[in-house]
Length: 192
Image 1 (cartoon, rainbow, N blue to C red):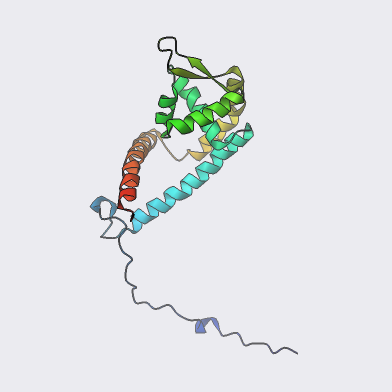
Image 2: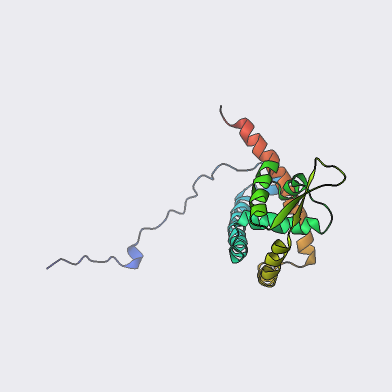
């Protein structure tokens, strides 16, 4: 018969020391990002942004899957639709809007063209330049998704009022620009 072990009472559980451990090194030195000399709130911001991006990627993938596309194909097609409503769109303009390389957007747009969802037309004013347009089939595909997309987006962003939205948009645009600079600096500082 196996011997049972005595379970120590809860009061006998090991206690954590109340002495403070040394603080980890700061991950930023900008005073605007420190609270009482600590970068704890900054780290929380970064971790919360990661959580939001992961959830938003899931939403994006769900929108894309609902119409049989990958997330990047869906993003290129919806962005082309948005920009196309304002005028003619080139690969370069679409790539700049998405903060992607022209070569990558060309690859994705070629695949979307093969699927019959977008067309590449020669610009009548500059025959060297191609214009991207969403086809009728692409328009129909996006129209099928619009009702679901609108409902999901309304719920995901229901915590923002119009002022929050304007501030968030401006902040995120600035963060994209500063992130590009940070990536360049990180590459420069990497040991060779």
